[in-house]
Length: 194
Image 1: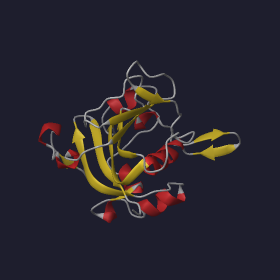
Image 2: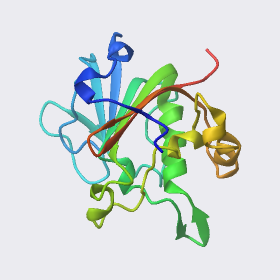
Image 3: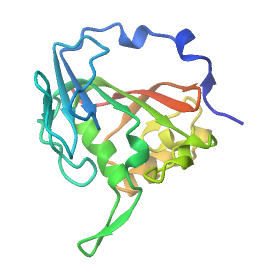
Image 4: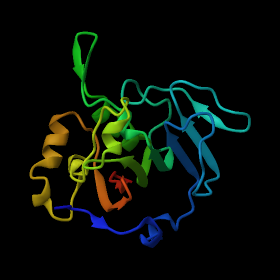
């Protein structure tokens, strides 16, 4: 049984985007970060490419290193077809690290208080979540419970507590989770002191 609201993307509530975004950050952006929010400044983050002419992209291996942006920089961070590529855990330099958890902590860090994290990722139980051999992080409709409290906390008992135990350094407020075909869509906001 799904714990998310299910409706087509075109009928999904849009009011969360009815804001003036000064700074948008697109993780895993490639050389041309998108700007569907009409932000005044758009910063792409990608580990493997330079910015195309007219675009701003900083290089960083999200989840493996600190994002080279100040705390509280972004009004919105988007991750389209990205989270599924972050490993859950790896052994590196004689230490077990959690790139997915670290990446979520970094996204929270660079968001302003109340800033929006908007993610869209192929998810279980759909085959597209497994098909690509570089999909190493399978997301479900309960994964969000480790980073944000669900409206019904019994869905992921002790999720936030376990997220902290695993190393998550932030807190998000659940705004909305929905399906767009085979993609799971997260809309969560950063909970921080002003």
